[in-house]
Length: 199
Image 1 (cartoon, rainbow, N blue to C red):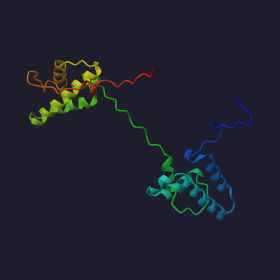
Image 2 (cartoon, one colour; image 1 turned 45 degrees about the vertical axis):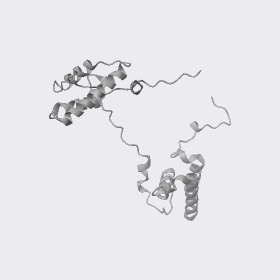
Image 3 (cartoon, rainbow, N blue to C red; image 1 turned 180 degrees about the vertical axis):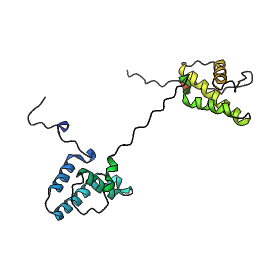
């Protein structure tokens, strides 16, 4: 729908730094178009002062003034011919986006335990017997039970934990259920949080 006299932002030129708004961008464009260098310099300093007043909370940040001049350089597409008080050559880094991180794809045979528990299994396989390994077994078994309760809607089986622990540590860890005591688990800890319905 095209109504005469209405001007939508979606139809306008895209802003380089939208946080400053379209009016500041127009001021920058005007400064670039000025023929006299002294006038351009005065205009640029005025624009930076206005930008400074827009975000007073940022004044405590290190190199705040330098950042404002970098922003001015970006908005002018580096076409503003003035005596810059700071080196603005590195300003391009502000708008450069980092490379996307690769999503870690791990093929866990039992997904409800999660990759962290499988890392513990790997660690337990290679640990020498002793107090440190016993403590890690206790932590791992209790975490496995929590995960089972969370994914099985509150039900878990000690024998299942013992069986899985032996299976995924290649038989290195054998949990003796006659002596091993699981921590008492608060059901509220593992219950999925559901939003209350509005009446």
